[in-house]
Image (cartoon, rainbow, N blue to C red; front, top):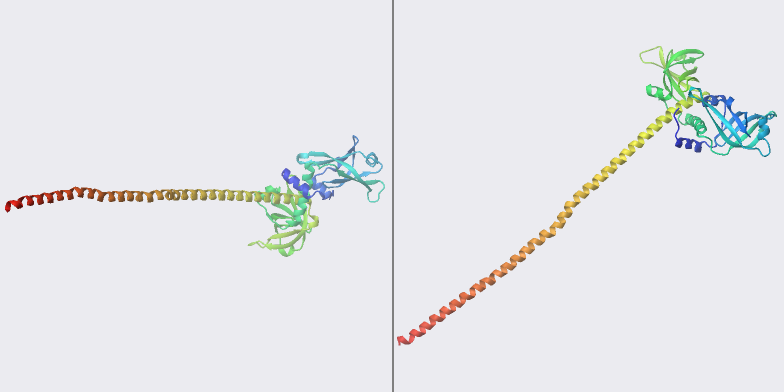
Length: 363
């Protein structure tokens, strides 16, 4: 089993805070609870007790009415009580912790005068270890209904994540053990390949034995063979589909399947988040490139727009100068023309004078 994160533990606590579980044999086995080391501690003294049920808010224990524990905790002003849990961990190590609580109710156990059920309400949030253990069990029960038809095909990766040591197993059909190969499993059933004839296997009761690791155990799941199809090319080998009896599926089996589905879902969500993040980065880069291209495209236009008035002004300025020089040219021509006219006038005057001087001489 993987280690739950603080976020997952908080989710368990919020979702299953008021859900109470009763410690049946199946739950005790699934949680690896050691009932012989469950105690209550009060005024520095501890007594063994039987834990009946628990939630994240309270626990119910069973104690004898004639013992010292009952005398202490049933007093009018009962002192605070600490409840000790103890679980087995891999490699036979023990996990134990105390939960602070107070007595809130005392009732006879099944109308017995020798036993009493004591309700201990927790005065603070229980340890994360308890929340993780109970939360996983409750989650597995919920997913066994919600995701009951999701099939897990056995391969090297799925076997490792499920904790299944090998595909080869034993199926007991009408009290006759047969060798089989497990092809897929789910909360609600499994498919196996075995020797036999379909007409002698269909609708027969069966028990499938699956060997798990971490913890090492063999889980027997009861069900019914609902279909048996012949393998192509073989008349003596069938693929049998088994439907489990939902009320008899062991919790340990549900925990293994739930752990696999949860892990796969987390991987899928992580991959989806990573793809979304990469897509967002690509869109951001594309947007940045678009803005950069637009900025570079607008700069030449702005330069051209800024340079255009200067180009337009230049011809007008040259034209003005040309006009001025053009207007200046006739003025100089007129200036040059004035001496020529004076010269012609002087010539004409001289000619006239000469004629006048020669006229009397002829007379």
